[in-house]
Image (cartoon, rainbow, N blue to C red; front, top):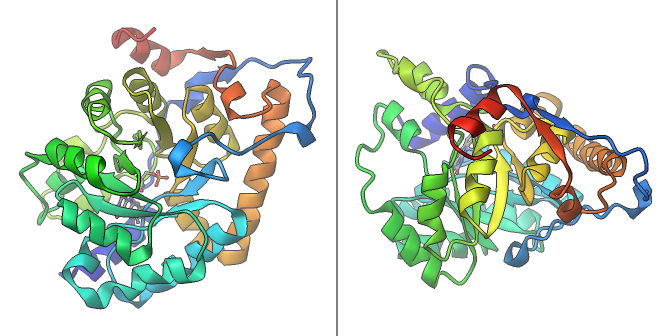
Length: 341
Ligand code: FNR
């Protein structure tokens, strides 16, 4: 099977079999503030993300790797949405374009459509420093995402089986690359222990990318005869993963994994995240409803964020991170079991 076909399968299965539930956001309750002392006009949605320079607290997370016309069309569309709405955008894995120059146009379109936007490159942790440089150069990226996807690889019949040396490569790349490095999961979550290892590198940001949204174990299981069922409910729920990362890492914390609406985003920020990435949910709107509807829904998302921040008395994202919340249910039990309460 070609790489382009595999990437198409990912998109199709992500829209059908691969959407999960179980972020544990449902176990978080806000504490309403009846005297917020500010108005909707006072809300500043710009996140404090240092070198990442984000203008919107929401970004389009990586999803369109592989080459081909279809990827080029989808990347072009997402890049225009990013430009119109001020969101940063990550491309999908660029390894295909590094190995095969003919696949580069499907990535370069992103810079062509959005010359001044914030764009993230994307590669797996098997990438070398030279490959990282090349990925950044192809789209003149402002940062590089390195994805960790052990469970996806193990579930893929043709996937990797050896994960040695990843931390050392990340260390080297984060020390020498001229742009900031973001390390992300792909929907199974980053633990406290993993974040602690990354805290010993020069990585600028960690995207917790937890369980509860796009589920690559389910997606890959759709493509194989003998299913690895035990991976289908594997992973750290997104709400827990944000807390795990925040405990171990002082840099920028990004939230992703099953984030669908303004409520999920605000909950991520109250848990300590600085910005939130959406992949599956944006992909679904893009494919089912088209470009202008996706742009409209992002503007609505920004409005909803400002409304909720007003009701919480939080003028900006830093204020939100200090808002009181009540955590109960499975998330409460999880935190006690992990000794995080
Ligand atoms: C992804 N994701 C992903 N991540 C990555 O780092 N490199 C990649 O190439 C891809 N490819 C990809 C394809 C498709 C079709 C989807 C839906 C997703 C993972 C993505 O960035 C994110 O971490 C997870 O999907 C969890 O977020 P959502 O989808 O639940 O919002």
